[in-house]
Image (cartoon, rainbow, N blue to C red; front, side, top):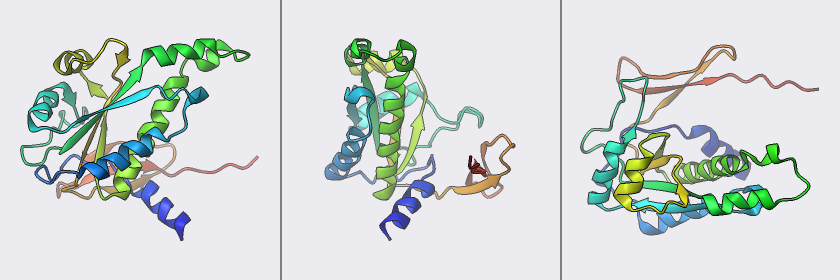
Amino acid sequence: MIARSTHKVLTGRRSVRKFKEQEPIPEHVMGRIVKAAAFAPSACNLQPIDYLAVTSQASKERISPHLRWATNLNDEMPKTGERPSLYIIPLMDREKIARLNEVKNIDRRLLENAHLISLGCAVANLVNQAHAEGIGSCIVGAIDERAIRVDFGIAAKYSIPLVIALGYPLESPRIELVAGDSPPTYYRDGNGVWVVQKREVEIKAI
């Protein structure tokens, strides 16, 4: 039963672009979501990510212009009243990442992108925990890092790879399976429903 519930969470999460803007995420729920991210696997257990929560209305209005949402859909931006109620900014600590160079007996090339693998694990934990809490999310990678750094006074030792938008969903995206060799995309159908295509994966045993 637990395995089925976990599978339902992992396969049910979709990117959301319409939120119940006026419905805040309780602080204790936000804490569980970030804690799930912090407990993700981390290369060499360096745990190089800190988290900044953007919760006030003023801060949310400041960060909004620095984000691009759906670049193949005319940069579809959430409208007033449908915007996220929370943003989480993962901060990658360059000083901790540099410690990967101190790891011995491992080819340097294997460590070049280790911190990005750690980031991917953390973000996956975060958005899936959010989904389990009934909260929608969208991972926004098209950001103006410099503007965010300046606006929020973020120290130079941190890099900002992406921003995660969160909020109670105002829409229910649906999945559309496509053949494994078809390039997947996303779009809104004739009824305005957000459609996310997923490749049908063939499992090959060797």
